[in-house]
Image (cartoon, rainbow, N blue to C red):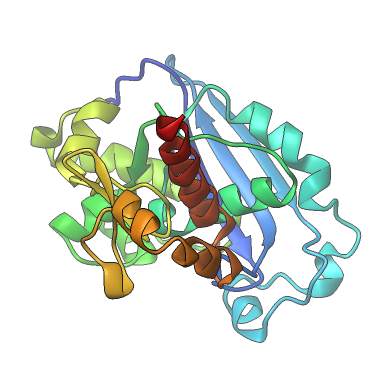
Length: 256
């Protein structure tokens, strides 16, 4: 069953220096942009992270410090990437918990705003785990009947993700073939920030961690204004801090 698109969907895959959203950086980005008429546009970039690539990350993706030392920094390609993703919905494999949050962090470090408001976010891993419980390489073999020979090459992984989604639509027709029906099937929680420090419950932002878990953010900020300062100084992602500041500013405006 062919995916019906109202606008382009961009499947992204990142290779990074490590897994910490707050401190690690992108070393490779690949985007497979699928147009409503089925045309595929590809963008792939090696990126100089200006920091060492961890041994653990190198063991997975095989990208060394020497391979990226002559590559552009993310800041140098940020506008190009941002424009390529407009106006796209976004897909990936574990992308809602890693690739998209990491990409947003990189944009914020450059002083660029990249909003996901109004975009459909399709995490193919979510469908796979709901239905089969496996990894990306196994998913590719299971759904597409092929071996992922170039695993952890960003472009190869992004393209494999797109092919897996197409195969999933054939195997599970009850999911539907629009991004709206796929999002509904996946049942992603109504998140506020990608680190899920805050989520929405009945349309209201609440804490999703720590001693204030379950309490509304506005209530905590009113009763413990110092908690805002603690979070802003803490090891939270820039996106989490941005959303916390937005909630605080909105609360202050209501007092005016």
